[in-house]
Image (tube, rainbow, N blue to C red; front, side):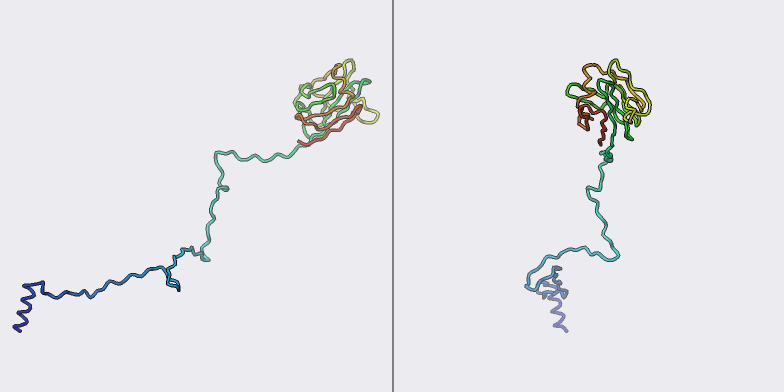
Length: 210
């Protein structure tokens, strides 16, 4: 017992002679979460997004689904309009020229042009914006009265009668415009040809779409 006391006293007096204390808790080595393949080489983990039956993927917005608020909406494309009219003309024996709207749409008169080899007559000369269905434009040679309004131009036995409501100015055809009464005639709409009359042709039906 005396010897044990002496040894404990020496340990206290000289701590350098004390045996090293071993920590019984050892550091646990960390393991990588990266799985290893059979060859011993590590592979990189791949992150995936699981989709269960209770979860539905949300649609993503694309650029073409978003309209720029600064841009006006696109106007719908207009359907083409069909214009129909009839030209009835008589040459030097009667000397008149009539354009009758035989369609269902108003015809913008100022956009019409009548052109022969020697003369040109613009629709604006009648000083009217348009002719409605059943209305007509009239021009006649100087010294010749306009045809009477009766059963209608073009009907058999009544070719000298005006069967429409005349609108605009009653134009007088002078010597410079006489060729439109009998010569070949081309009709333009917005400077594009849409029909015509042959030489000495009295009745000409014109129909076009715009």
